[in-house]
Length: 386
Image (tube, rainbow, N blue to C red):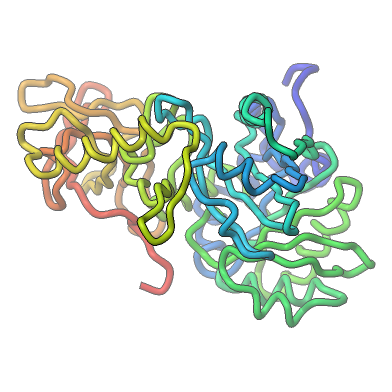
């Protein structure tokens, strides 16, 4: 680690628990504790505890905060109810994805944006450029906040027991909503029913100086349910099974939301509910229309699609591996891949030509010079309750 590497407020907790620490987006973060598979399975069957304090938090306040976000982002943030949240994206004028975000509405004139760690400074700078003319202000509050996630089917009970006041609010909380509760020890927390694992779960935003107390409280209250600390490696296989995109892999500056199968997050408006202009609108309308035309005749289209892949062998297709044709020419690329602890088979996400994107299509992956067959399948690979 370099002297410039940032550390989470929970760094000492990770060291004490024997975590393996790595550099992630300029942060020294735990990649694993007891082991990737054990941590993955704990979240699928019980509960896991994650430190996500490397994520970026940006406050947006002002009389025109909602109008500003409607102009800056691809979704309609003014439609978020108080206590609600929305997954959205910040796109460039050409439609390329700068980052995917979650926006929380804390008050009529107050929103909080959560950005990916590696992109936080870029997001802040881009939003600042788009701020002119709006009665709103931005504030980077990342250094003041620690983000702790409790994920898994037993998460609701654990977080409820962590509260001193507000347990009923936790139970009543809907997916993609949030509330403020008082945790044990009188700690005030902003708690959202959100996550990145494909399981039920909660994300707790607390003061950085209170992070260690909240972390220990979660381990204590979750001990009877077998909660264990989990690293970023298991978080990655969990989100992969759930078909959730990762910036820098499925989403990049060179992809549009429509390329990634996420056109639903782009709100153009309707005749009954019109929406004005927003940054990237013209390019995204063109991307939408081109996608529709390509889908009408996929064999002749040059467009690509993000698909799920499942293999029968033991060798996993990793990010960057080529999807090839029978002659060995590259026709696509794997964006994420790993052995699936839940399915017991290798899985991957990849961009392939539309002609190869139908479920059941067999494709070839160049795995270190050896061709491995995988089958296109609908995402997600795993769905809670299915």
